[in-house]
Length: 230
Image 1 (cartoon, rainbow, N blue to C red):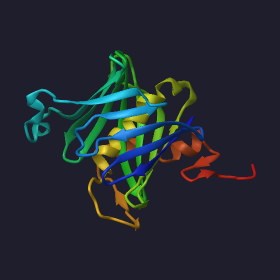
Image 2: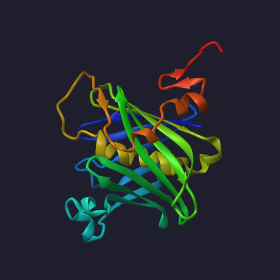
Image 3: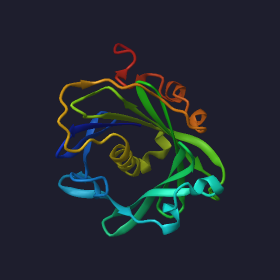
């Protein structure tokens, strides 16, 4: 399964069109005023998944706590379908510049996301964890973000193994959440094309292998079909 998220509004609004296997699926909406506003996936005028930012325990706001062997958790988000709990996101920082995201879907499915930037692309590798949460069992998805943008409108592409398609909504919301903290520009005056290149220094960078996409989706790259006539 391939999910494409294209930002359609930046500056005052933060809106996105979402396509699943090239068919329009839903709209994504981030907060207009600041990054702590709610996040929504909307289909046919109704919210299908909602994200509500959460205050974490005060101990996680202690600066440099990770220097003493503990982790700093931040950027908590609770997911809801209607009034039902649907999961949560949180960032776990383990060192200076070293962090990953933990995603919980429902009450027992947990994933870990690692970040890496290489030149014109930012990558997020999504790993499934064992039931105990201690062991990574397999990589299930790769998110690519192209860092060259027009009018600060970003595009994202998620390659998701078909057997995990049931979690596409949660992963789409994660894309909006991730964009909200890392790419969104509010109240900017920028117009035109912006070119950016970046390289990661995190100790977790080896967890992200861009070639995973080529091995699992050999007929596709960020811009579409590799062979238009194949």
